[in-house]
Length: 484
Ligand SMILES: *Cc1c(COP(=O)(O)O)cnc(C)c1O
Image (cartoon, rainbow, N blue to C red):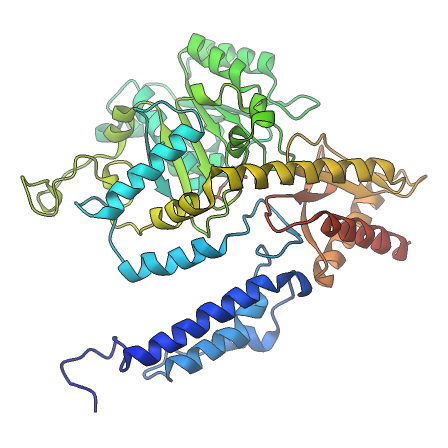
C-alpha cells in the first residue's frame, strides 16, 4: 500500500527505479558504441506516427513499460547525428559523458536565473573559459542560451539598444527618428533575419552585401552600402561578420571588418556558430583573426563542441551594454543582504529568460574531462577529413566540387563528363541525395551554391573515420551511375 502522504509523482520503489535507470544507462551507452553498424537514419513508419496521436492517459503503466515504448518507437527513429556518417546541416554528435551530465543536471534541477548556488558560479566559470578560448577580454560578459539563433538575437538586441539614439528599452522602435539598419553578406544564416523580425526592425533592415568568388563578404560593396544608407538618412548600427558560413564554411575578412566598424563607429557582431571553434587550432587561427575584437560573438556548443542539444553562447565585450539591455527588477527578485539571493550578476540580467535550466553542467563536465586538447584534435581531424574529401572529389572525373573548402564543409555534385545541362544536373543530384539518405549509408544534406544544387557534407562529427568518407563517395558514384 502506498503511503497517502507520498506523492504518486515520486517512485513507489526508489530501488526499482534505480535498477531501471542503470539499465537505461547501460543500454544507451551500448547503443552509442554500436552505431557504426546501424543505418544513419530511417523513415518513421506510419504506425509509429499514429502511436503519437494517442490521447493523454488518465493512468499510466509502470516505468519499465514506458521505457520499452521508448526503445521500440523512439530510439530507432532518431535524427542520426550521433552516427559516424551523419554530415547534415551543421550538427554536433554529442558525447557520452555530457549526456550523463544532462541527467545529473535534471536530477539536481536548479533554476539557474541567479541565486547563491553552485550552478550559478559554474556558469560564470564556463563563460570565462569560453572567453579565454575565443580571445575575448576578461571583462566581457556572456550567457549560455539554447543555441546560436538565440545568441545572434541577444547580440543584436544589445547592439540595437546600445546604438539607438533614444532609450529603446523604454520607448520602443516606434520612437526611432530614423530606421536602424544592419549589414551582412548574402551567405549569412537565416537566424540573423529571424532576429531582425523578432526585434521589430524587419528583414528589410538587413542590407545584404554581395560575397566574392570565395563566398566572403565584399568589403568595397559594404563600404558603399553604408555610405549610401547614411546619405539616405538611415541609421547604420551594426555589421555581422561570418566565422564559417552555413553553406560553405567561408570566413568573412573579420580583421578588415573590425577595422571598418571602428572607423564607422558600428557595432561588430560575429556569427561563429561552428567556425569560432577554429580559434582552438593554431593552424586554423588565421581564419578567425579579428574575431577577438568583435563587440559580440555568438556560437554554439552543440555543434563542434559536441555538447548535447541545446547549448549556445553569446559573449559581449561591453558588459554594461549587455546588462542594460536585459536587466529589469521587481520586489520578488531583489538581492537581499544575505540568504539565497545576494548574487551580483544573476543570469536573468543577461538574457530573455527568467527560469533557466542548468546548461552549464554538461559544458563544464565535458571541458573538465575531455580538456581543450581533445576538442582541438577532433576539430583539426574534421578539417583534415574535409580536405581529403575535397582531394578525392577533384580526382574523381564524375564528381565536381561546387565551392571552395574553407574549413569543414564540402559542397559537390555528381556530374558525368559531357553532361552540361544545369537543370538536369540539379534533378540528378537531388535524386542521388534523397536515395542516399533513404539508404541509411550516409547522411549529407543539400544547399545551393550560386543557384546550383549541391550535396553538402558538413563535418562536425568526432566519430567519423576516413573510411566513412570512402563509403560516401562510393555510394554517390553508385547512385549516380545507376540513375543514368
Ligand atoms: C547553426 C547556425 C546558426 C543557428 O544556430 P542554432 O544553434 O541552430 O540556433 C547560426 N549561424 C550559423 C552559421 C549556423 O551554422
